Image 1 (cartoon, one colour):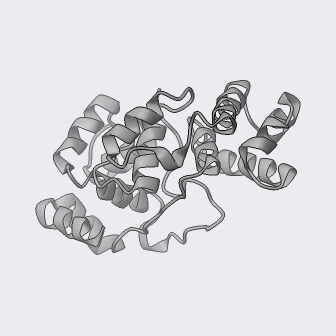
Image 2 (image 1 turned 90 degrees about the horizontal axis):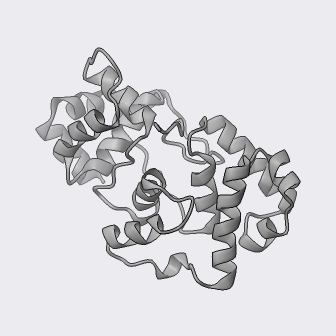
Image 3 (image 1 turned 45 degrees about the horizontal axis):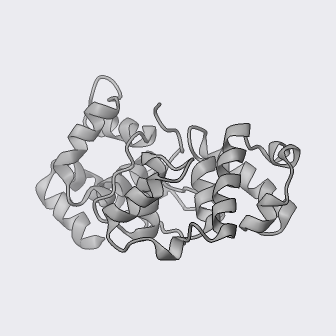
Length: 215
């Protein structure tokens, strides 16, 4: 990642400024697991705090977020944990596929785009979730979590834009940072969270973002 940080900083004033202000961003990573997918689904279109709280309640109640234990939970249990009916359906659906053996994260293609396309075939996994998996799990250098509002807010602040860009405009700006968009996202998230003053919480879920995704 440091190579990409240096490349971005040498080519773009925005990232040169962020590197001086904050230093290299933390190397946030996640494991290829059902638990990770549950976290990502919880983080869709809600605040990070709300997603973390719901995950902790689920984890404490069932003693480990694994497919079999989620499937043994009732809809009422999931609702009390903080899951919407839609997210309960998504998580249950993925759990069923894993228990049946028709979906196995260890068998995803090694090529990032092929893996992303396979993930997108799963109900509940959209472009943002698939991109986050590519970035935080697969380590895809060019993954860009389209629709992540924190990225666009950070972009607007640091580029001194009058308004927060929408998805189309924000993604068009980010296209110039390819093939290092994952590192660009990390640097923008890091600044959004306070830069050098931000101390990552190891118990947090998607540390990098608010989890808010534009519709």
